[in-house]
Image (cartoon, rainbow, N blue to C red; front, side, top):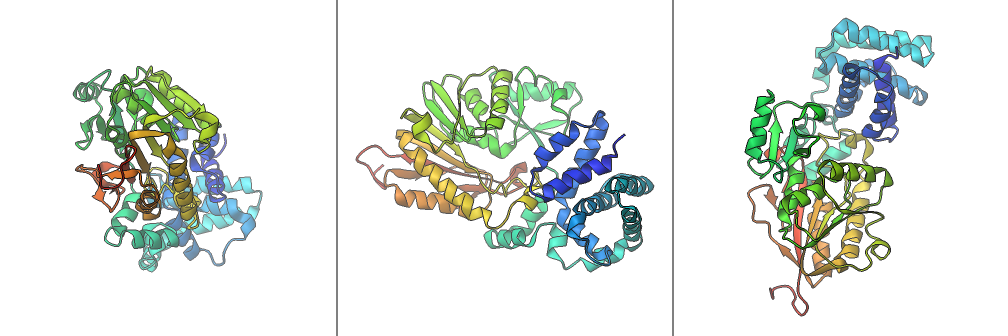
Length: 441
């Protein structure tokens, strides 16, 4: 049987080399038969990614000299071993012995001795090492230095809360399909199945479970009664002011959660057009539509290439959930801390501006464009909207009169953990009728 710690170490190594955790883990789990073993490897991988920076700092305290670049898989294996000792309910002897056994895959006899020595040294010096790292912010908050500096600059009064929230386990949130069942009745159904849950007060359809569980165990999931979707993402459909016979464009539509929520809130839309440029993600959109027994026009293309896919068709509503740094969903995708670089943020901001400019001509007069990101950085949010409004005399912001998030000059920001939600940003823009400009509506 393949050593589970070795599988986890290979996944962590791939993430450190730039592959997403979800992609690497999905491939790795296909090699494991038992669900219990799959859950163990998944917990290891998410945990190491979540605390990678701290684990790396601890390892540096234990090594007499840094590992060579060619020993990158050994580095990952040592982090896997340390994480078990620090944050998992694994018996110490099992954590040490199985991690040492995994080192046999490295085909280097000295590696076995090193893994054993490092893990046992940590057990002897844990209090000393923890004390030595007290003033090391990268180790304390388990974020690379550039993340800490940028979050401090963006949110000087909230940065510690954000960093702490980023390292927390995310809540397991559901969206009830009220075309099929009311939220109250679905909560009662959960209780009947001994599943503890409560309503999210900021949402009309949101439920948070006390503990996560496999989706197959959710009553009514296969029948389309409920979907898994974070609370902040559920805000989008409710902000669009949908009405029967409208045509709606969902730009950058995968995986389809917001798309299907639109159709749940207003099933009598004339058409919903979903555009996604990644062919690999189209199947998820189709799966969600099929499970919820819904229909949409699904197009595979770069949504900014409007001449190729739109046929110049005008729409009443546009939802632009723009690609971004994903700095608001780190607790859900901890590998983001490792994959992103500081230089990525301005690149995303430029692409967001490009998408807004490309889609604006498709919006009918008096139509609404909802701009959304899962970022917490003004570069991708407030600043993007400010630049867009300054360039378009026929665009006017509709202020969000809601009881969630924090008001900015333009739009509102939900920070990670606020209202039991992920970090998200929304701004709502109306297209003025011909002949009108700012201040004339």
